[in-house]
Each structure stands twice: as structure tokens, then as C-alpha cells.
Figure 1 (spheres, one colour):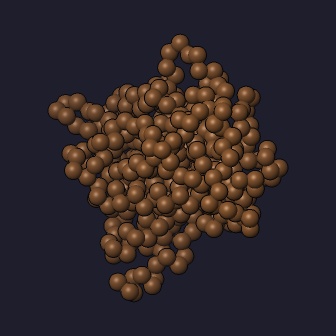
Figure 2 (cartoon, rainbow, N blue to C red; figure 1 turned 180 degrees about the vertical axis):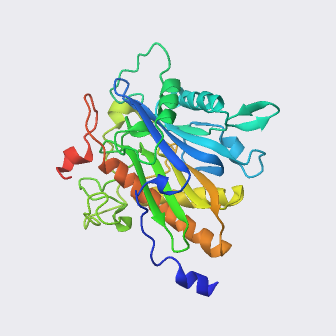
Figure 3 (cartoon, one colour; figure 1 turned 45 degrees about the horizontal axis):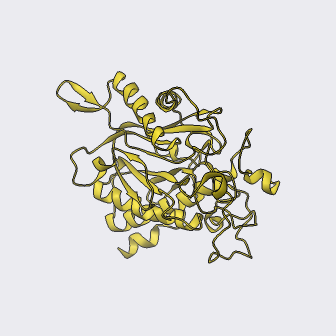
Length: 346
């Protein structure tokens, strides 16, 4: 394994878009409702793909995640959904399921097709938007996001990141990618709505700075005054309450993985949250990572390749979290400033 290890891990670099859609066969669509201050993001795979999930936060909200356990029958998912709206946002997946069924996609059961669309939600119900709707808006947002899927998509105040926040700053939707020396591509997609802080409290620097590529989230480097042992003052608590958090993410690769290997990828990817959000995985967060493998490129050296896929996934997720917060834009009625407003940088 020594030779394989020596030739790998030396030249990882972002894909052409620096988005999760650098993984071939994936598209992403966003939809948002500015009045409600919320939205939905859909990751669509061209073909049913192996997927798994790891939940490390104490307050998750999910749909169809039991199917992703390695011992469960269904082996491939059609799409994954990240949404705002707390429990109401789980209905976004219904809009995606309806639309995919109309397209003839889904798990075959006799002459029926049942699209497999696991989803996760974040809490954005107390962010200043008008939540006094007559009917749940998320089913329509899910269908709209699916209709919008593309190789390119917006970051920041978009999709599931529309109404998100962190301890000090407005949150957002982030993404990043890496191409490994082995030829495998890894990408991350995340809606950042954390109890913790993505930036060093009182400073513009991001905790994820050691993993930044170029100036993808400002290029400021590590903060010389960072004190990670100090709990950041949480500006959202009075406005939102202590149940208003969750960072939900997807990491994806074109590698051939079993469901067990995909589970390990999701688990290791959580390191990216710990590197970029302080604190993370609290009882007040529903922190969750889906993993997805399209199966286009076999592993040449299973042990070494899988280790490097996990490292790349964690690095991509850390970068994606910072990119999502860095790209957030202001909107009327915001309860938190954006990074750009707070620090006057672009």
C-alpha cells in the first residue's frame, strides 16, 4: 500500500465549478420564498445512486433515512432534499417525489414506481419571515427546485440556505469540490444554520481557513487571535430560541462504494463540520450528513482510496460551510447581518 499512498494526496484541487456538481451525473436546484424567508435545495442523480447518512446533532428532522442503513433493501436513491421549514419542510420531498414519479423514475414495485428521496430539514421558523401561510409552501418549493436543477447554482442566500443563520452571522448554502490524484471527484453541499459560529467570534476569519483553496471565502487565512475553547456569544438565542439550529449537508463522489462504505464516508465528513463550526454537534443542532456515490469510477486501492475520499469529503464540507456564510446576501427583515455587512469585504 506504500506506493499507492505515496502517489496520492499530493495534488488535490477543486473541480471546474468548485461545486458538488463537479461529480459527474449530479445536478442541483434551488427554490426560495422571500416572503417566508425559506427555501429548498434538491440534489438529483442521473441514475439511482448508493447513499447513506450519519446524524451527530441532537435535534434532527428527517424523512426516509432508515432506508439508507447498510442492511436495508433499497440500494439507490433518486434525489436528496435539504430544506428549511422545520417539520413543515419535510413536505418539500413530497413535491420532488410527485414530479419524479411523473417522469417514470423510482424503485420498481410491480408496475409501480416509487421515487426514493430522503430529506433533512433545518429550523428557520423564527427568522423574521412571514410564516402565517394558509397552506404549506414546501411541497411547491420542492417541485420548483427539482425543475431548476442544473450544473450551476447559486450559493449563499439561496435554496435551503435562504433563512439560515449562525451564532453571529447570517448562514447560507455552500458547496465545494476536490479532484483526487486517483481521478475520483468529491463534492459537498451544505445549508449552514448552526448554533455555533463559522467565523472566529469578533473577527472576519473563518475557522475553516486552513482548508481554504485560493480566496474562495475571502483569503484571510487563520485568525491569530482565535480561541476555540471559548463558547461564542450567540446572537440568535433571544430572537430564535435554543431549538433553532441544524447544519444539513451532502457529500458525494463518483467512486464505486457499498452502502457500508458510504456510511463511513458520511461519518468521516462530519469532521468538516467540527473544523468549520465552533461548537458543532450540540444538543441544540440536528447536524446531519448524507453521502452519495454514483458508482462511475472503481476504487483502485480500496483501503487507501477510501481513506483519501473521507479526507477530501471532510475538507470539502469545511470549505463549503465557510463559502455558504461568506456568500450570504442581505434581505429585508433579517435578524442577523451577513458576513459582507459585518466586515465590509467582498
